[in-house]
Length: 181
Image (cartoon, rainbow, N blue to C red; front, side, top):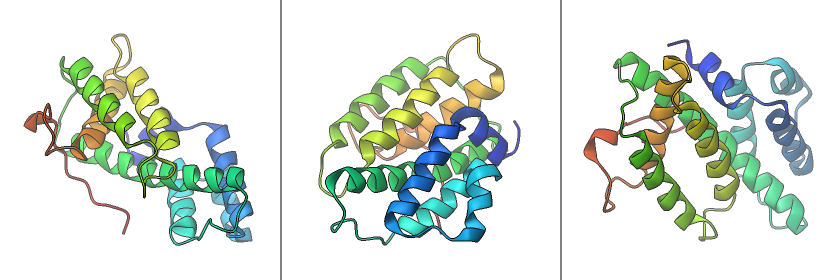
C-alpha cells in the first residue's frame, strides 16, 4: 500500500472537503495565515489534522444554526479522516487485506452509524460517516484496485470497531488505532 497521506487523499481527497474545512475555520475565526497553504495544497491528512485541532475546543453555541452545523460537520469529518488514515496504515503494516465479508461489514457499519445520528455529543456525525463510509463503500467494490479495496476495508473496520461490544460485531473486524494526540 502507499503511505497514509496518499491513501487518505486517494480515497477521500476532494477539493470540496478542503473548502469545507476552510469555511468552517473562517466561521470559527480559527484560520491562521500559515495554515492556508496546508489547507489548499498540503496532504489531506494534514489539512484534516489542522482543522480538527483548531475546532476541537471551539464553542459553536453563539453561531447561527447553519454555521454550527458546518463547524460540527467539519470537526467530525476532520477527526475521522485522520483516524481513517491511521487505520489504513495499521492494516497495511499488518498486511491485512480486504476479505469477501465486506458486504456484511458495510451493512453493520451503516446500521450502527445511522443509529448515532442526532444523539447528544454526536454533532456532525452524519456528515462524517456518510462521506467516509460512502467513499469506503466505493473503494471495496469488485473491480477496484487491491490497494483501494484494502484501504476501504480498513476504514470500515475502523468504524465497526466503535461498536465492538454490539451484537453482530465480528472480532476479526477489530482494528485498534490511536486517536488524534
